Image (tube, rainbow, N blue to C red):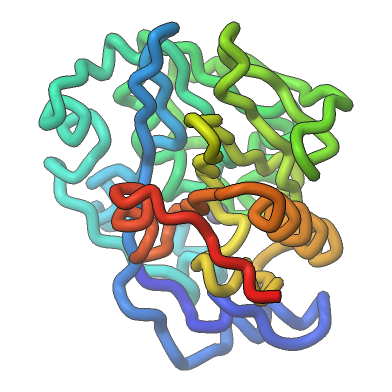
Length: 268
Ligand SMILES: [Zn+2]
């Protein structure tokens, strides 16, 4: 996908950031749309579902919506969808136990159709914000969700995990934790996998690159700038306290950092 450069790194005061993003003439380079899979003893866990190849059908995106008219372009081949991608690494989508959605934007929810047999977890807040006509106005595509889509609505608990004030343990082992990272959307979450002495942070759209997180630079589309900044601060603190492999969905460097288990270096 490509978005406007100012979506990746927002400019201007709060209410002007979205219009300034849409008016931006500069596009980013082509960005990946990552989704993640954890082969856990308690069951296979998928974080986000990527995008659907249907984006190339004329009229798939609502043309009346300024973001889809001006702000984004996507190219997805059928074999790039998450179903075929999982099969390519020997995992049947039907065998996935949990799908955790960081948020419901189309480039994270477009692959939901591959997971009719899985339990899909969405925060109550995210679901309420994304559904219906208001959801459409906010840029979600609820009319494209599968007919059968009835996610398990979760509420985070006031249970601290590192610097994150709200969390929810997913596995009995306690090694996969959903943490609240609101800002990019009101119900946005990230997923932490505690692995030996390090944490892998599947971060959704908390920032578009690791460097922008380190710099505390929020994007140009977050409806709540203060919340987005706060979430970045929690992530910075987390990465200062322990080795954290930070994996935003659209950072071209995420896959390599995961492969190498390369932790964030917070310069002090
Ligand atoms: Zn998003």
